[in-house]
Image (cartoon, rainbow, N blue to C red; front, side):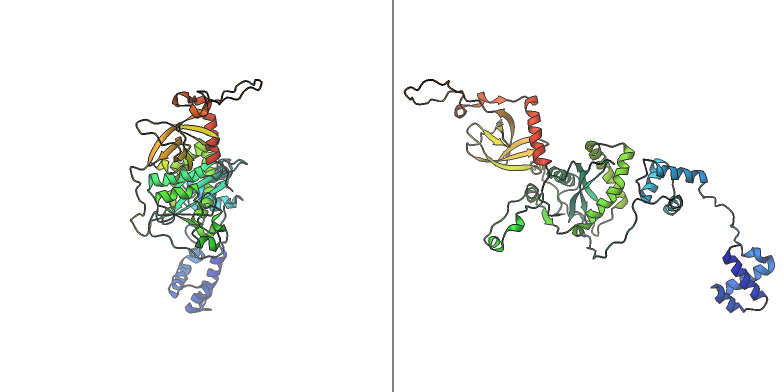
Length: 440
């Protein structure tokens, strides 16, 4: 008998011997008088055995076998699952090992084996929680986090966005470091799958907000002076998205908590799937988003969404790119990043010489030119070399007549088209410098 059962027997025996009343016995054991009467009758008929529960010593039918418990412990200690937190490990057991077990049971087995969860609950400082937006698409929280996603010593930056109203992940993209292309890719996922959101909430990183914005004095602001938009800020204006800068990590708490969850789960998922490269990870993430949202997302307060559909006549790629102003010359040529490009005219009229044009640069389509809402393809070229006249003795100076191959006389027939092998490496280097460089 247990100590509790022995104590009950002692009190009931005193009741039977007349040393205690029913009310006194009930108060002593914390039971009702009806229960005391039932226990008294049972002990008088069956003796002390009546106080022992009938299931005492019997193994439950649904109890886990010692063999299965040992298997679970070995799986948790394996390289595949050792970094999974208990909750995630429980889910992985059901999906990959066909072992269904409750969290409390799993927790008991692992803690008894001396295994602690990598992700323990810790006390958080109390803070006022901001209410969720009522509609999906009203506010998107966007950020990036560097982490050792592949379990190596090398960190990569995961760019992501989460809907404030539902907690849905609306975009994920892994890159070498936090960069413009990473945020453009996430924005493309949002617009392509959901639509154009009303606003994006991000930190004050130089990708989102020019660092000169805070340097304007009150007098300069009153004079109407403004700071040029960043490339991301300009793209958001073209899409009609309000860009809201956050002043602290706590202000965008939902995306910060998302990083805690993904940093705990994704490295384990990558290891199980055998993923070791950025390209493999990005392909996996497109499917993982659906799995994550089905498990963690909640319903918005209002069923209508705030997303807007993109106009069918607009190419999103011509917005989510780098745009720079340049001047085109007489031959339809312009320079960019110490490289030269020539505009290709098909059925449209040529762009007037010395005209300001928008140069569009993207890893998707390379280099294009936009003029009056018309987009033109370009080709790289090598400027014709000047011919140098051999040195001779000083003679009477004559007017200089440039040769036909001179820069100011070249025409379309003199433009040397570069082959793929000649230009590819150079242009890829330029695109990487623009889109994948680290920002201050």
